[in-house]
Image (cartoon, rainbow, N blue to C red; front, side):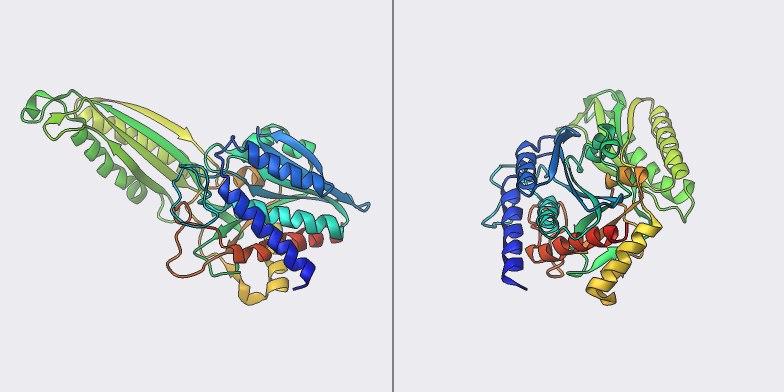
Length: 387
């Protein structure tokens, strides 16, 4: 590595650690947006702010080519109290970059600098710094604000770090990669009473337990075995004392799927089971069912491009075909629904005991920053080389 390239990577590490120290939640990334926009302006990019409230797009043109490419990095953090003990730990209590978006942003900023200095491409590059991936669908918000009308892209690409994937490997998969996600809130309305006199009350806890068990049949008995789905009750809140039957119980569900028909069937059956079980106990139930992110589905040509590039640059042994889709969700799905593209993984594994994403001890592996930064440079230059 040359001295110049070493200095560039040192700058990327410094940016990543600065961003890690200053996390912001989705749609509140004001300081992060300022930081990103300032860097891009210094490098000579045309900078547009405010898409999706706090999103930033940096545009760089070179040559006479009509081709264009979009590369996306997410910027938001999570409401988690950090436990890494790192010198660059979050300075904001209760917030941290527990998913590696600080690394994603730093790598794309590092690539922005190299691309601007080399100008070894023929066309237009749009660097998309997106807010609110974790909860508020920032990708869709930017699209609704005219992202692809204002910044036309022939293709769009994104990546995510993966602490479970061997270090430096690129994980690719054509077609469905991540699931659609829905949420459901159930409120069971019973009749409270003394715990010693249950016959005089209508116990919403017993009803809730019955609903939980009945929901386990949705995936096993209502959906085709080859259609992957998940129905998880992640929270069950009711009562505060051992001798008091509460008035109500509340449950929170997450529902994951890929097939649109299976998604509809999941909602239908969950509603039917919840209402039927509640009625059988003589109670009423309120159901708040909301559709979330769509399934993330990669396009074949663009995924082939990523696979071939990674093979050429890193070697065939560094490219991993993901054996199955993930039941996690990602709002890059909305960008892939609007434009051809591919979403892939960058392995950042240190040891077999690495904390997973969204863990209070998670910290992006800085050793992976040069790999991601340089891959973005090569991807942009290669994509626009012949256009």
